[in-house]
Length: 139
Image 1: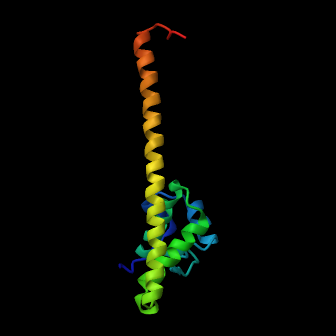
Image 2 (image 1 turned 90 degrees about the horizontal axis):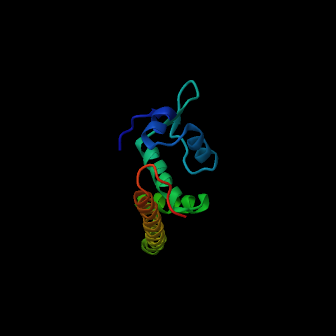
Image 3 (image 1 turned 90 degrees about the vertical axis):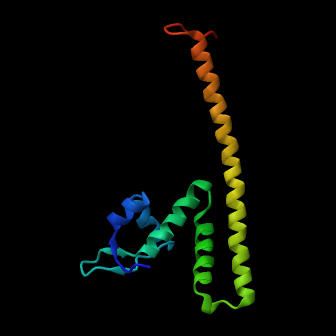
């Protein structure tokens, strides 16, 4: 990974997260800046950006902060291959697998919601088209 450090503004632009949100994730321990500048500014690496992207992707699927923390902890431990023996590695992989399955289930639920929303919008369009220009739709 690139060891280039970025300030919080660049990280916010890259992740499409607000400065406030990034600071909140820092306060909750989900992401910790890799360094601080001499002036005390938060400095982040590409690794930190990738961590924030995981969080950003989990949020709209309804995962809690605790679940985000648990998944990040599991993936951090998996990335540190030397610390995980065979049984521990299998347990960590199972945790990650459970999150993948939960994400797939939530995505399917969102697809159903989207389909219903598209049907609703199409019904409204049909009603407006039937009314014609300048005419009120029939009640």
